[in-house]
Image (cartoon, rainbow, N blue to C red; front, side, top):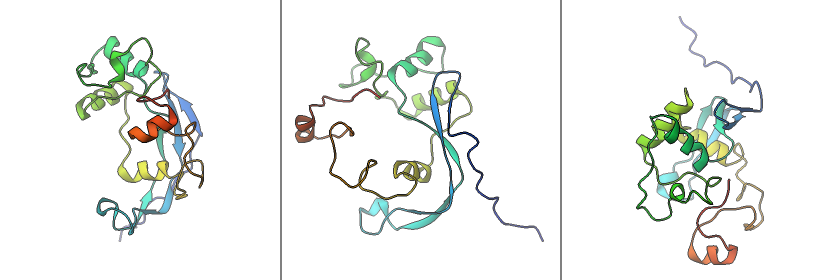
Length: 171
């Protein structure tokens, strides 16, 4: 009878690396049991359940306009976003190169992943695990205190007025 046990979670060989395209990556060490979702929130976040997450690599920050532009200018498979969409950072060359790339659809994202080579988007479980500081479940990535404009990128007209943000900020 074959052994059906899953392989153990591999430790990360390095904490960080930068690829040939200049994109910084971090290795997130996995876990045998991550409590994903919640029972006291919106229906799309329930039910709470346990998942196994192997170690994985994820970009250290969002992909910037400059990084995406390298793909568009260099050679396909990347295409420029629709410049008629309000708020697209790509069309503001003079001051948005270090801002996150936005205004792209899944086909454009796949083109960029092909350009980078051998990578994929994180799964929902991987993204939630990374976004919650490896399952720490604190209200904010910096801890339990109320949001701080210097540490957050938040939406909403009232919050933007409070934090003096207009659209995105530099990565």
